[in-house]
Image (cartoon, rainbow, N blue to C red; front, side, top):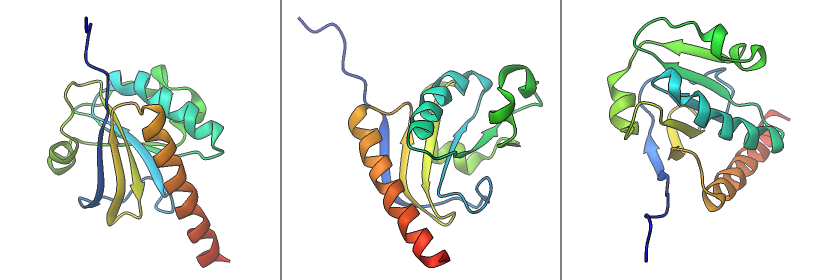
Length: 143
């Protein structure tokens, strides 16, 4: 008997990034969401990034000003940018529910990998390997 379908995040590769400067322009990876309820899923991503030794920027596309200081730890709040709702990002992400988060890996013009929802172990492994590769390329070009 099958109780429920296995969870699988939405993953896309090599897509054009809608116009938007990513948080802290130098960042290769950043997280986002469209509703404060995404904070729970963002916590999963943040713990994975922390274990990988990387602090991603965060951008929240919120409909109205909401008290972020009340729901975000100071270390996360300090690297969070808030934008108004941007239709082209919502159209790209197509969250299946308001609390859905997403992760972007890319250079600000091209998204190498987009993950909508919390990652599975296999998806995180791919994301982390791509992040490591991009970081080493960025280090070589900066050094």
